[in-house]
Length: 434
Length: 146
Picture (cartoon, rainbow over the protein chains, first blue to last red):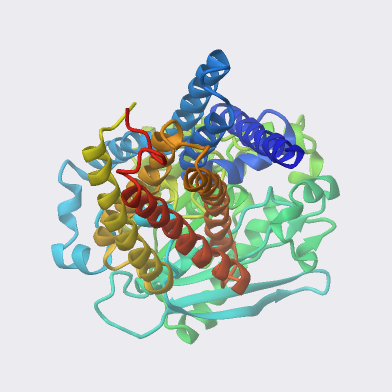
């Protein structure tokens, strides 16, 4: 008798534990997390919630079974109400997918015309592209890994203090009719400029490589701020990337240096097409992507002193894809400190503006595709809004895809509704802009 | 909500068919899937969700109907507890599998094994409960439809 009683108490504790997790998830969904650790959890939690409605549903039925309906009618009704509420709330990422799709359609229509999808041949779409923005199979059982060829840990920079490597993702078999047509993608990882490593978002890189793109996933020097690195400790930082005096300006120089070596060596080595280059990255990598893409022609602009011979001029940037990018460097330096750009944020120096993407925009800039979760608490969505506004004012094509309840880096697992919708529009955007 | 005996019989037969279709397609997807025929996996994904939901609903429908004083009813009640706990942990394993497959270059064997075990286990419980239901549907000592 006692044994059954203890099992029942254990099961009730399990149900209460799952319900508590549910309430915490709702807090993350709506706010993105207000304390530092909840913000980090916001990177993972909204991505895994697609299974949680079923977990909540099963937990509620288990809880109801444990409570005698006839003796505890009020408690029974309360559990039923709480369980239904949690199941519904956990379904929000899935339920709101049509909103993300409709928003993306409207952004593409404005940028590329009402019939933007007609620019892609039907044969190409049916053979290589995702047939719909959301498929329920992957939501349930994960995203299938695409087959491609990967070469890892190729050194492109070593000054004794820091060593930088890159990986290349290529199609497995050289097929001439693949949509990527060996266009080059330079992939820049995130990690708050102080942490992180190549290898973020491998599912998307493998998918695009299988489509015929040649993807260079590069490291860059990291700013030495131990407390921030500690905060991003899950980011698998390579200690050989950290340099004592590195700033964002140096990071851009490292990436610029890579573009020069791409032209001199690696494009031939990996058969990459430099007449069609895309730059893509998330978070801090999204900021660096935007600075590279929008600052590429800045050696004739008002911030030319910072962009003198930084990039190779023998590549053609067709478009850039910053995901949840940071923007105002002065505002960010006020929070992070002097090490970001080597001077205090109160300094009258123009260096902060020179590395603020929205300040670099001009009418010759390439088209831009932005991913932005509306519950992102690590990078305020207003930052990508500022970039979009500057691009709109300059008449540059910009599609900013907004995802309700998505937090920071919420496309990484790909199988969730945010990741699938993102990939559906990303592959089309890259093809249209080749 | 109460279903009549005839409706419940139909519900269980449907559940058996859906569980068999789901189990086969889930294992095919998990071991062989590519992104090339996504529309098929969209269709099957919907079937998987429906199957799991109606497996759970069967337990809910039977909760007040099973005669727990009867030895068979007592076992059916215990199996339904096991099934619910198994479903909850299976879903958590699927979440973990999705996370691991995104961040690691290959899925560790233990995760792979646990995922397959979860898929088989959930369908097994669904089939078992539907089978018991059909077998004892006319036995008023086990299932009371009044």
